Amino acid sequence: MVRPKDPAVRTQLIERAAVMLRAREPITLRSLVAGTGVSTMAVYTHFGGMDGLWQALRQEGFTRLGARLTTVPVSDDPVRDLTALAAAYLDNALTHPDLYRVMFDASVDLEDLPAADATLEHLVQAARRGRDAGRFRADVVPLDLAIQSWTIGHGLVSLVATGPLPRETLDHGPFLLRALFTACGDDPDRCRASVEQGWHRPAPDDERSAAR
Amino acid sequence: MVRPKDPAVRTQLIERAAVMLRAREPITLRSLVAGTGVSTMAVYTHFGGMDGLWQALRQEGFTRLGARLTTVPVSDDPVRDLTALAAAYLDNALTHPDLYRVMFDASVDLEDLPAADATLEHLVQAARRGRDAGRFRADVVPLDLAIQSWTIGHGLVSLVATGPLPRETLDHGPFLLRALFTACGDDPDRCRASVEQGWHRPAPDDERSAAR
DNA sequence: GCGCTGAACATAGCATCGCTATGCCATGTA
DNA sequence: TACATGGCATAGCGATGCTATGTTCAGCGC
Image (cartoon, rainbow over all chains, first blue to last red; front, side, top):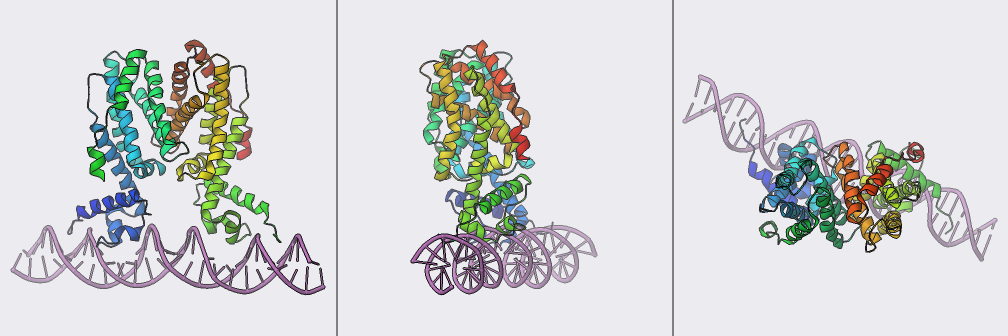
């Protein structure tokens, strides 16, 4: 290693790609490096090609999603928190719809699995706290409940963001979450209150404003 | 119209594109027409370009899905039928994963909405029968329940087919459907039995064998 | 402190992509 | 039967991702 590669170039290209993605501009090898001062070869030294760039974009998407989920505060009501996490998931996906599409459009890349698992872990923790707090039955497996919550969130957002259903479809979220949580043993009335609070909790908008 | 366009060419190209899709071969204008005897211009006279071909492929996917759902018999147990429809939806998506991806990957095309609605209509009918039969509460809106079922099915299959989760994730299907149906007023015990029967009902394999 | 080494980067060119311009020809009509 | 018209084949264009080749510069041994 006689001449280290400049990490600033890497982040610059990823950032520019994310901006172009949001602007609905086609991301092309030449259009990506145009105006940056770097040449097309930089994409190959840093990412190994366009495929590597897309993979890096997926990582960036999961990183931003993880940062967004981290802003969800932990309260003494795990069901409310779990709902808030789901709401934050939907909000993030609709705030960065193109990035979200990139994260799940491409064929599965094993390099992306750890990032996806890290995302899921947020839900697993909340599910575990809900079980330990007695809101869910003792035989509820936190990972299973997390996957089921993720299924509802991902189903909703992909049918709306990249699918044929209108945005109002997201209003089914609280009902679906209540159905799930109640089936896991939560008291219907408490569940309704918790989901109501978690769903409508105003999302911290630092992420949204900082991203623009 | 002095020289009518040959409809056989159109179906031949769509069929070939579907085969190449299943074979994981990249579908290219030139590779598509290679060996068919027709030239690249045929794609433009019949589809107006590659975008039109992809749209035709989406239509084909919805058509096959609709045909698959039609094979689900109507019984005297609407909840079982609704579960069987969901199971058939998953089965179809996993039988034609690449076609399924094409159906939902692309940006929403207003031309595709009627096809998607026709798919949804199967679920709406079953939901309505479930409500009229007294299995669901009278205030259950069939369209809402259909959308909620679709959300679960699409969430599961896209997290598995084009996402990071393993195939066993589909086993969460019955639990999620029971949670949903029970939340709509179905008796838990009857619901469990109906979902069990609908989920494990052997899928008619004419579609699967005919497609290969 | 200097020259060598090798990786990062710039440039040019290749194969292939989707698409279009153009000409031929088959076919329905007068 | 002669014509007009739209389907289809051919050739070529701009743009794509990628690679081969040359240049430059940071880091190490002496």
